[in-house]
Structure formats: structure tokens, C-alpha cells
Image 1 (cartoon, rainbow, N blue to C red):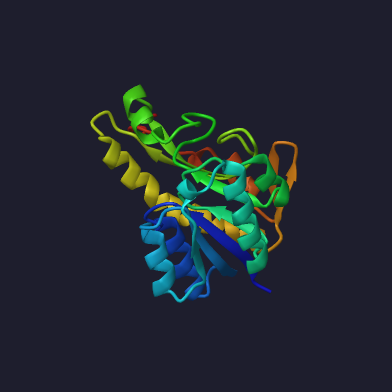
Image 2: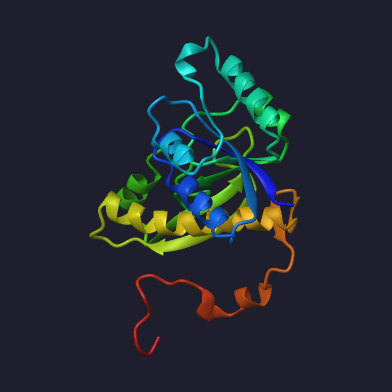
Length: 225
């Protein structure tokens, strides 16, 4: 049976669209039970409607507290039957009550190689300003600390000295749209287990990690090195 999920998003929803496309293509074995947004004009709602998916919008500014708003989300998700909650550009911190309602069932993607440049919405700009040579993206479980839950998968991209923030983020987004669905597929196949901070993927080819040529080096090594 396909994994029932709910997608929470606040904006454009490109990661949500990548999941929708792969689900409809029969590649990603999920059943999107709900697309939920906290912003009335979020593009992700148009994407949900275009795909014929159930959606719901609740304006968080209409609620007296974060806890009251999250309680409404919990109810909507439970009514949808979703088992895993996917944060796809959801721009609000979740309360303890929300995470306790779905223990170890909430995942997120962050545009950096965590723990570097976590805890904020300017990870790309911070990486460019710092002058790193590698950046990337991380899919992780969500806990009460921002961008700190156990890591499921990461992907690295080069960061050049002449890059703008947009240059880097465009490169990162391409990989986000690949690794986030991959993480979901592993969950759908029941291959993910967590022991402390370590996430294990059953059947993953760990021998590849022992081969230096599978490591990304940037700038690239030149002849003789």
C-alpha cells in the first residue's frame, strides 16, 4: 500500500510539485492525502488543485497562538489519514504538541549540509558569504531544535567564489527535487530506521562510500593529483 502523506508548505511548492510528478509517474509510492498551507496565496495550493489533490488553507494570523493553529493542523492531518508529514517550504516552527502527535513522522529539507548554516532561512546567502567550496541540501527528521533532527540523506553541490546566492540556490534546488522524493520512497518501502542520531537505510550500498572516487571534491582535482 502506498505511503499516505501530508505536505505542509507556505509558498511556491516546487518540492511538492516534484513529489506530485513522481507520484503520478508511478515512481514515488506515496498517496498525497492532503496539501496544507498557512498562507492564502501560496502557489502550492494552485499546484494541489491542478493535480486534483485534497488541500486545505488556514491563515495562521487568525489564531491567537501557535499552539491553537497547530492543533487545527493536527486535526486536519489526522482526518486525512496521512501517516508521514512532509515539510516542503513550510515557514513556521512546529510546536511540541504537533511533534508529539506525530512522533518521528515529520521530515524536512534544508538547503545546506547540516549542521552547517542551520537555524535560519538564509542558508544559501550565508554559505556564499562565508566562501565555502561545497554546499548542498539535507533531508532530516524534525525535532524541537531547529534543523537538528537525524539526517536521512544529503547531497553536495559546488559553491564557486563568483556565485550569487541565486546561482547556488538554483543548483541546490535541482538536488532537493531528487533527494526529498528518494527519502520518501525509502520510508514508503519501510527501509528507514533510527538509532539515536543515526539513520539506517536497509539495503543501501555502503561499499560505494569506501571508494574515494565517489566523493565530491570542489574545485575539481587537476591532472597529477
